[in-house]
Length: 268
Image 1 (cartoon, rainbow, N blue to C red):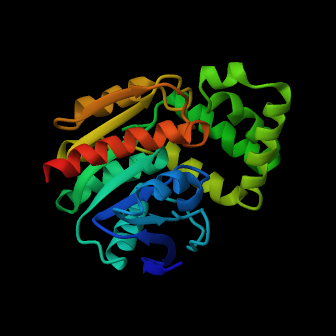
Image 2 (cartoon, helix red, strand yellow; image 1 turned 60 degrees about the horizontal axis):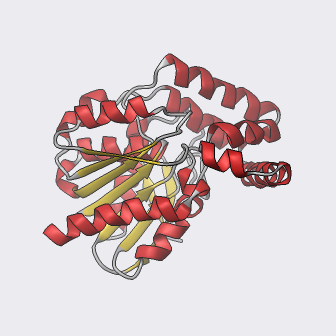
């Protein structure tokens, strides 16, 4: 995969496909590939997809200090520019939604459209308390964090349908995904706690879809409603599922994003 130097770091990013630019920004603890594989497969025949690994994830290397949203914005814009994208559609999930929103407010002239799932403008005490627990757990026993996330990140229907064996399998898989990445996860969670992009949101000019999961217990839906009020002409859609919709129901997650991309590109 290509790499680009941004500040003092080296950003690893995935690039594939052909067509207009589409930049995908992953959430806490994920990578460009793990967060976006089904969507990439669905759109690579018509978009040039760029999916960077943010600081703390994948093969991206930095100085190991605190992670700030503005640094992540620079990484996303740096990867897009290095891949040859002058303007692009932008999609983000969770922390990636925050970064995508901030990027669209920082460099609005570069963004053709914006889709943000499970995003928020400013971290409140409820979220901060939860994310502090993540940090404590990942540094002591990542399996416990994986178990906690099974019932906070998934929607009600998914949880009701799971057998005891399926709960165990899901926790094991997520524990494995965290393997060796504890420090990066903790650093990204600290970045989550520090989020406040409120002043950037009125500067967003791209057609914007705010996607809210009805059962989101990590970034509850009132945060997405606030985003829709703060961003001029933003559209808000609520879908079934939890915060972890990209992993819980990849087909539904992909469908809501591709629908917005299709509607926006049809008007260009």
